[in-house]
Amino acid sequence: MAIIFADGMDSYTATADITTKFDSNSDTSDNTFSSTGGRFGGGAIVCSDDGQWVDKVIPASGATVTTDELFVAVSFKITNLTLAANQGIIFFGQNGDVGLGGASVMDGLWVRINGGQFQLMRGSSLIDTGTLTVAVDVWYRLEFRIVIDPSSGIFQMKINETTDINFSGDTDDAGPHSINVIKLGHQSTTGESYFDDLVIHNSAGSAPTSWLGDLRIDTLRPDGAGDSSDSTPNTGTRHEAVDDSGVNDGDTTYVSMGLNDEDLYTVGDMPFTPNAIHAVVVNVACRADGTTPRALRGKVKTGTTEGNGDSETVFYGSVYKTIQNSFPTDPDTAAAWTEAGVNGMQIGQEVTT
Image (cartoon, rainbow, N blue to C red; front, side, top):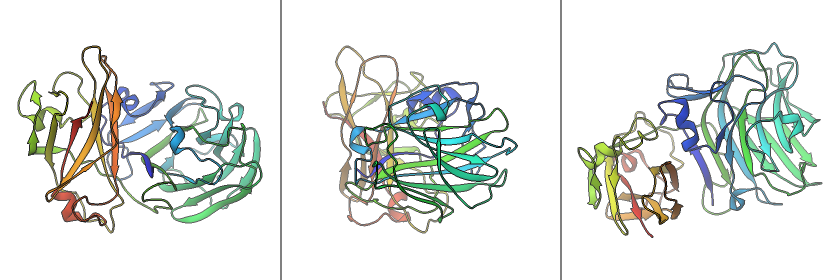
C-alpha cells in the first residue's frame, strides 16, 4: 500500500457528502463544505468549533507500525489566531477515537497553534515547537512524516517543503504502536480552519513512499463513452449517469451492473499543465441491491492496457460507499503519468464478485 487516501475536496456538493469518503463528521453545523473556499478556488472542508472533527480511519495495513512511515499532507489556512493555546488543527489518533472529543484528552499525537507557532502534542504533553510564525488567511502546505515508537519514534513536519518540526523520541501515546485515525478540525470557538488536497500514504508497497512536496488535486469526471459498456443507466447515457458534480446524487442518476460487468468512460482534460503527476486516483460511489454483498474495483485504461485496482466489498443497503483505487503509473507504459496520458485515459469500474 502506498496512497491510502486522497481527496481534493472538489467532488462534494453539500456538507452531507463529506461522510461518503470520510468516516465521521462529528457536527455538520461546525464542519462544513465550501464549494469555493479551496486553495485553488475549488472545494474545501471548513471547521469552526472546539471538539468537532472530520475523521478518516486508517486501515491496519496502512498504519505506522514500528518502522513503517506514515505520510500525511494537507493544504491549510486559519482565519483567526486570537486564542493563545490549544488551537488544535490535526490529530493522529492511536486508539481509534472517532467523533467528538478534545485532542488533549484523546490518545495520540496532535498539532496545535499556540502564540502563532505550530506545536506538537502527545496527549496533554507539549513535546516540540516549530519556528514559523503563522499568518491568518494564508494557505500553507503541511506535510507530516510519522513513525510510532516509545523510544525511537519520528515526527517531522514540513511547511511549504521546509522543515518546521523535527522530533525524535517517544511518539507512542496509547501503546498500540500505530495511527488508526486522522482527524481534521479547529480546537477553538474563534475563527475557522480550512483544509484542501489531503493525501495519506505510507512507505510500504508501491510509490509514492516518501515526501510528495507541494501539490494540488484536480477532479476529472466522465464525459463520454469508453471501450466497455456492460451497465444499464437508469436515465440518459452511461457517462451522464455517473458524472455527478457531487460525490453522488443518490438514486437520481446511476448505472446498474451485475457480476463481471465492466464500464469505462472517457474523462475531461486536466485544467493545467503539471510539473509531475504522482498518481491517478479513481473514485466510484456505489451500493449493492438485494441481500448479497458485492465486490467492486476501479479501473484505468490507457492505450490497449487496463489497470485494475484492488477489489473492495460493497454491502447491500441504501447508503453509498466510495471505493478508491490509486494508480501511481500509466498502465500502458509502466512509467510515470504524463499530461497526455491522463487526458487520453479511460476510467471506470468492474464488479468482481
